[in-house]
Length: 350
Image (cartoon, rainbow, N blue to C red; front, top):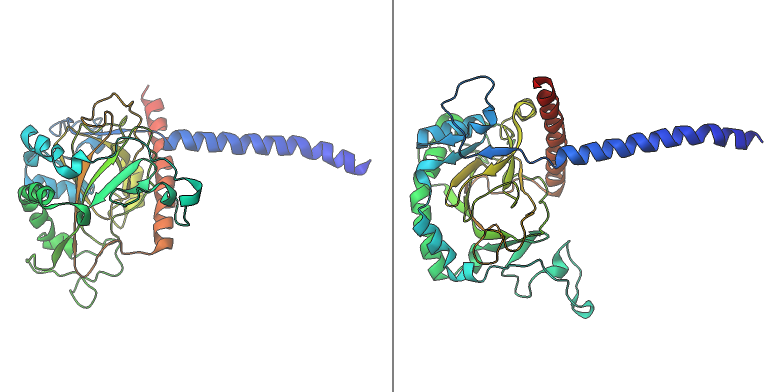
């Protein structure tokens, strides 16, 4: 009888606990799924304090871009935007013509092999690799001569930004969250002279996110200072899974910065140059478009080019598996907290 009485008293507490946990998980999921825009059409000239500072990442000159990269870790560089003719040329590359248009299909049981998540859905020749379900990447070693000719022409156009970023001595001397990069230029440290001799292109790829693809995990391209550049080949939006970045997360004081700026999804037209500090925590979002939406070949796919540049002394990613997992959880937590703050501020403004 005593045990039955204890059970009756315990059941309401368990029900309350389960309801609280369920509500918390639902609220966290809702907050994390917000897709607040980082708009390429935002007006930087508006100095009103009520204007969202997160949208002030637009730059029309290289110095403006460098300033935005220093402050928020992100810059949409309008004066480097590709012309429609160049975007069309990229889409006609042999690599682009072979771009996947559908979600991967699981291999037959007898063909399956052990490996990481997604390995059993990998194309046989692995020309197009998966970073998440429905997110395909074609790396530089799988690009042909004709592809490289077009892409290296684009690289020449964006090179002034790369050069300006790495020749910015004052910023390059700062450790800013990279414990392996010393400011004196010694062993394992970043070079602090005004040269580009130790800069290399660490990554060049063509990628796409097909309709129905899923979110990437939050991650950094490098734990040390570097530059990543995304060039959308269609209009980036929240619906088709534009890149989501935690503004301010490149800086050593990023929790404070991110609490004020938060996660933003790039909204930018095709051909835009979206640059971010490699230490910025970010992820590619899932593509919610339908198959007949904008995207050229393949309907609603979201293709883009990615260029990454780093120093020889600090190649990416700059951390191991545990560091990557920690970054993923950091990104999720800050995304949820800033989403809650945004909703609270919105409620107060009504």
